[in-house]
Image (cartoon, rainbow, N blue to C red; front, side, top):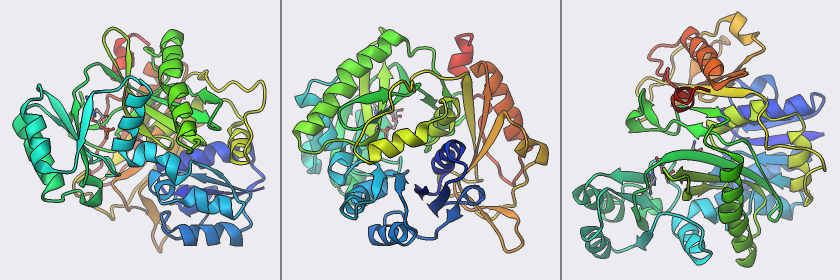
Length: 429
Ligand code: AMP
Ligand code: GLY
């Protein structure tokens, strides 16, 4: 069997790790990959959004299965193109990926099908947006409708801040095409939860939920990032809450997409706010695994994810009897980011990982922005550099291991949070 993973971040390294565990004899490719994926797969240089080039690479290598990591190639129609070439692909069509690539589309769909979500209105005209903001209670949220690589949502304490955010998106064009349409949205309070469902468009299996840590600094302070760490499972995700999420959110959205003529195949990621009374509400959908959620979820899943992804990619559903909903123990992933991340990450620092850490069975070092230089030394090449996942019976124990490991890996300017999982630890888990 020959498998291509598209993408080059920590999520893709974690996906490769899980797939390789299921099929150690299979041949793996990763496009473009990183220094970590090159140990499990042959890296293929190229851009994931270059649909022609990725398709050609899959054809040339006679790949049986493509697993697409990031959203941009899905939004660009990679899954549609590979389907035309009859190459089995795990990941939604561009039409179904609009659930992430157009927040305006997602919002309309949710309202139409009564899926609980923050009240919002979409605008392309600044004057109309400004008028609406003028009568909106504070705080409020301004969001670019399109894909903005994690920079599209601005939580605003005041209407004045919201006007500034709307102006920068609609008039200044700060986010380009992604910000040509914006949403002005009600602020939701509560605790965030990332719920990922693997689906063939009709059936679905909810994976053990995770919690991301979006802010750069400890105690959830500082600027928003792509995610500084994640843990799994999450204590607030009771069976009752998950049933509500399945019934009120996942099931109706999959049905809505079928009605739209865009059946969903792949991983549907629901970014939720859970209110203090325990009611789930959608903040956003993503059309893929989360990063760094994947680095915390995949290590606690049972073996056998590869056959599931392959069956779905080929138009089928899960093997009977496989249960993906229950976490085996707990995992905590701590992200190590480059100096200057998220605004201006500095590249080039040499990375050193203690050999005993590489050999530790309870620690997984997933690479993101890394590459080997001509001398074979590991170098920083991106904003998020590594995610160190530790597994243990409890989140508290996994968090301590992950933090210790993150401390022992060195590169100049390393930034990481020592409090990943703090909410769960405060719950006594
Ligand atoms: P998004 O890009 O939609 O995932 O938003 C990024 C982050 O902004 C989320 O993870 C939340 O922390 C925050 N956020 C987005 N929308 C809302 C909202 N309606 N209420 C409260 N926080 C929000
Ligand atoms: N960790 C958030 C995301 O993957 O979008």
